[in-house]
Image (cartoon, one colour):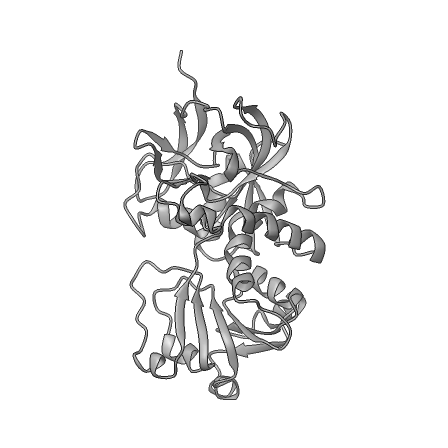
Amino acid sequence: MAEEFHGYAAFDKEGILKPYSYTPKPLDDEDIEVEITHCGICGTDLHTIKSGWAPAMYPVIVGHEIVGKVSKKGSKVNDFNIGDRVGIGFQVYSCGKCDECIAGYNQLCPTRVFTINDKWNNQYQAHGGYADKIRAHSNSVFHIPKEISSAEACPLLCAGLTTFVPLKRHKVGPGMKVGILGIGGLGHLAIQWAAKMGAEVTAISQSDKKRDEANKFGATNFLNASDPNDVKKFTHSLDIIFSTSGSSNTDWTKYIELIKNHGTLVLLGVPDAPVTIPAFTFLRFIKVEGSLIGGSQDMKDMLEFAVKHNVRPLVQITPIKDINEGIKTVDKGKAKYRVVLEIKS
């Protein structure tokens, strides 16, 4: 009788998750099976459920901020033991041998397998963490430090990594003026990272509602983008802006005007619609770039930094039986600041 894993899947764009069972890929010599205890709800899950970025392979189990315990391992796995508490992010496989992997960009490996809405060897569908178990290659599984709770670890595995890596890559530190656009699930972590790295951090939002919270996260300044006087005050003042906004209606002209000549705009939130950047941006030698999660070493560095500098997400814990309510909370932008499913206590 074939093995089955059990979870909650979306069957169409309506996004109502229902119980679903599937046959997992075989456990290979370098694979690990994880019994899941917690899984975060990320905006990417919602994009996938709704086929926002690409058609979803329905039925699809999403969830890629996964924490649990090792329940099985392949014969060649030496760095993990049965019962170890571990995490899995947005990737379950990279070859470890190609130029991208060797350079530390495992997420750009040409044979990579993402945790959700992807396939192993064009055969077994990769289902995510809204389930009881998952299998992944051991180089995509990470030990969770004892100082970090399972619920707090979940958002770090995607939102934390996504925001930490570009800050690390741009060597953010003392003397730099950094803008964080959006104070939500990504932004509240980006502010913490940048502040603990020693930068002067300007939190950018559409209203004053989150001013006090931004200050608590470590922001030096607060910019209300709906206030013309505020916008004028910060014109051409920032070395770099990290945009966590996934809105398709973002006024990029306004935010680019905040960046100094020779500065950089880094897009972390990805909208469904194409991003339109005004041509004059490049006449001021401003660079526009994106960033995709991080490599295996990046994940280890991020978790180590989180422990050392006490960076943690704010989470709301929801039992798996209320999964559709949790999805609605995130979809309506009411999460403070990440929703984490408790799958097994």
